[in-house]
Picture 1 (cartoon, rainbow, N blue to C red):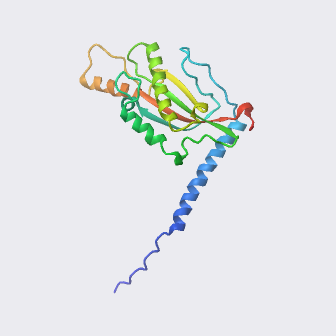
Picture 2: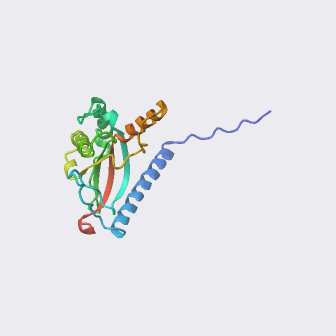
Picture 3: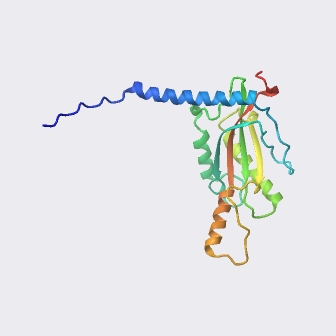
Length: 210
């Protein structure tokens, strides 16, 4: 007769909390590594504003914690700068939960947290018009996020890229394109029409904690 193996004990709440605790400590350590790098590695700088006067770039010494791309075709109707209802729903899901801390900017004076909203367009139309479109769409997203945070105006940067930083390369259109080639170009342009939300940690003013 085969002997029955003793049933393995189930993981209790203690094991579950241990996993959660280890994960939390890992995130805390990652944050302090970023802060240490900023304070000892490179000074926070700011690039010159874009030639069109819209937005401002982030400095080369800054540290990006995370970056999220949101498809422009989901957020906006074609050619529009006001958020569509689907776009508002996406923003509410991302930033509507106050308990998540996603809009908490307090870093204890060691560093400053910035939310950078980048507006990107495709290559269709005039460049100057696309700069305006990118900025106006970034502004609309900012207004939607601001409904969830009174602190946001002091911690946000708006940027417009037009089509200067595409997410997917677009081949120059030829005179005779196959349906497959047209589909590839349309898919690339759709990917380039987007809003990027960047979570940025920068050094405190003067490079030292206040």
